[in-house]
Length: 366
Ligand SMILES: *Cc1c(COP(=O)(O)O)cnc(C)c1O
Image (tube, rainbow, N blue to C red; front, side, top):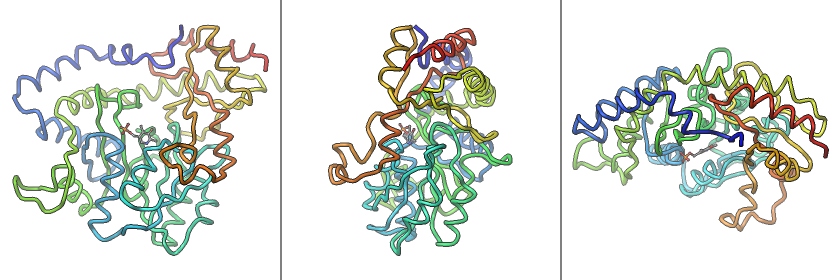
């Protein structure tokens, strides 16, 4: 079986360094908010090209706490509208609704699957206060236009960069394109911990300071609580794992790009629509093709020893969790969810396996 993502093989590349880092933490006797976190925060901030990185427990919390911090700072209020692509992973939307803000779902660009500037512009009302673009599958949303719209209407922009560590435009990386960004270091992400972890990046000093308190019970100083915060910290051991892996992120992105290039050049079956990518803006967290008979293609590949996944099978507005939206119609989003299929993609995928996947895709008969 050609696996979709062999995480064991990904981490095995760095086994000795990971064990050394874990040992260092174990022997230090200091397991939460210490020097490992500080080092990783500094290095990841530098990598993204921002002043601040604030480690938190996971990607969802990175987004949720940023919006919460903006509420505490008086920049957002309950009921304010936040524009978000309708086809995103549900976390982006949960971050909005859990803060009692109102998610406004908009149809994505049907080619890039990212937030469509025209639809964004059309969705703006008096209550709109923020935009939450998602760099879906690893490709940057059209941040030039989105930031322009935000400037015109005085809106905050929170990037969901959970799938796009290292994606860049004109040398400017994800995490530094909006007012703030949320990252996930879930094990399967392009920069993955060996457990849950996440971070916020920003150039805003006040936001950074608020987040540092929020993640730690609303406290800057032990036993002195200025906010009703939460416990959302990035463990020392995960920070140490992430520091090892951050050093190899660019090499891994290069591997992903090589695989994507092979797929793009090799697959020529008209039944499959290939992704369109622009320059360095794509880091290929996922290589997503579209196919009218998606389930048939997936079954065919499985029968021939290729594991694929669907990102994602059910649109957020069709989820039971958001029953109030179930009758709404988002045709672009719905067709994406019916047709997308993610081919094997990882920095350790063998080129001979890539070749096999290409041959199988080309031999597929719809
Ligand atoms: C993974 C992901 C998240 C959430 O990250 P977790 O660390 O799993 O909480 C948020 N948004 C997107 C687009 C993601 O892919």
